[in-house]
Length: 406
Image 1 (cartoon, rainbow, N blue to C red):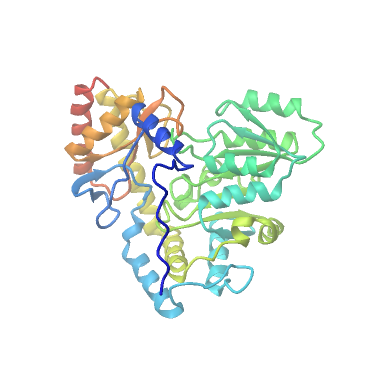
Image 2 (cartoon, rainbow, N blue to C red):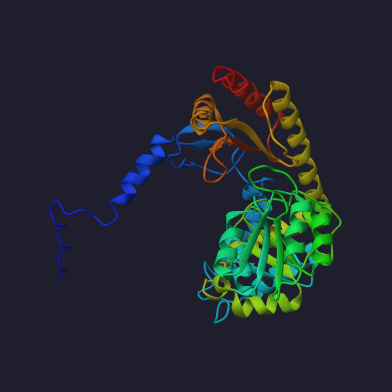
């Protein structure tokens, strides 16, 4: 006989009551949101919350989430190896296909070795916190991803932040700490996730070499987008051999789930032993591994090159349209194209009205971006049709005028 659950004491305030006040504060600042519910597949035209909309909010750059080759590979892997790995990598959860995928990624990225993590967030946070300690120094771009920031904090290293993409400020910090007794890490996003601009990687590599720093790049939004067949910002900017640690994701252009770290054999061996997300997370199920293997095989082919080319063609078309309508798109250089609004309340209202008219473009406000710099973040994909993008532009222009965004 089961014991009945205890009845809560009447009128006794929960120790979590402060969360209600915090949520009410978000609502007052127009920063509260509901999760959009996707019904069906992640495609350029999708059904969210029961409404068919043009999807400009997905990281599915190349449309691989629904690609037939990836579907077949996921199904084949499940039939052959089951639905799960059953353990962490360091005990009984390293399957041959995990090692095959890592070798495949290493070849694609032109490095010695690779290790796959549960997510891109875990790859960044786990790597930074593993390789550095409290006696070390991290020099980080102010707009680096939250996973880099969290990894830096977890490491307990001293953190110095330089103005976004400002090589002069970065060098001044490095000069001031030229005699730092511990290790030094210089770290940047390859493509910045909220602004869509590209890191000044050659200049940063120069500084890393001059001041004896470990050079690390988070290439999550560059992999599958920049470089030959989507090899990333290191390939795009000709920095092979100058970046010691490359982080990427399997959850965006690759179309599946996970993250990875690329570098030397010794780096990867060390992460096997010290990166906590690797040590304490069950490894990817066969279906995910098979999907990723098929994605990299596709990407490293003529078909992959065509997808990347189409992505950029659609991106240029959409950017031209936004600028012609009078929207401010910041310094974007990639498919991530912010539509700057400023006030959070207006940005969220803009997004809301666009959704009602058939366009899904997410509003982004504080703390993801600084106060006063709220925006819509739009991303086109290789699989958007020109007619759909033209329709999205027409709707955005009309609603934008109604709200005095343009």
